[in-house]
Image (cartoon, rainbow, N blue to C red; front, side, top):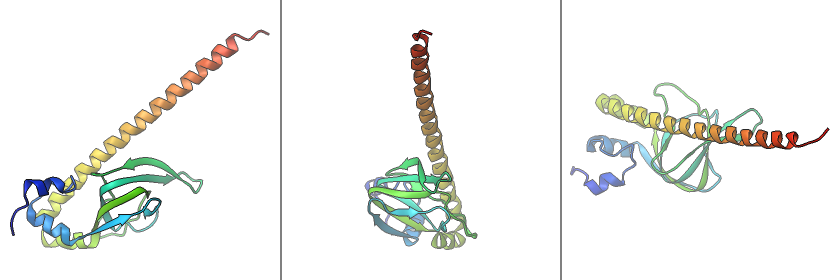
Length: 174
């Protein structure tokens, strides 16, 4: 089978760019293309985590339940990001909910198919697992940066409110 052109490689999801053609063909056999509409839930806390979703178009809100039964957004993902990393050989559950914002296109890699591919070709499994780990590390670093930015803004807002209050209280007469 012929190798992919540079243009074809560049159109791939960033997680897949540069992978050997044999591995890409195997991943295609493990995948399905899907489209989702705004408001749909593609992963829900407590449900089985059975796939990896490679975001190609659109945005996805990651939400966690903070105890009030409602989801609180903790992240926003877009094209080039991915959702999920199932663990092979065991049943795992999503620890967050992913809600579609606008129309979204994804490549869903089915975990059981992926496991069979990697059992037949362990070297491909190692290579892809390393890609997933690096991708997850990058996404977690961005999440930490986002949390730091939000925390800094919240702190600055509180300081301004306290300064305003202190200025108002200082000008009052007894």
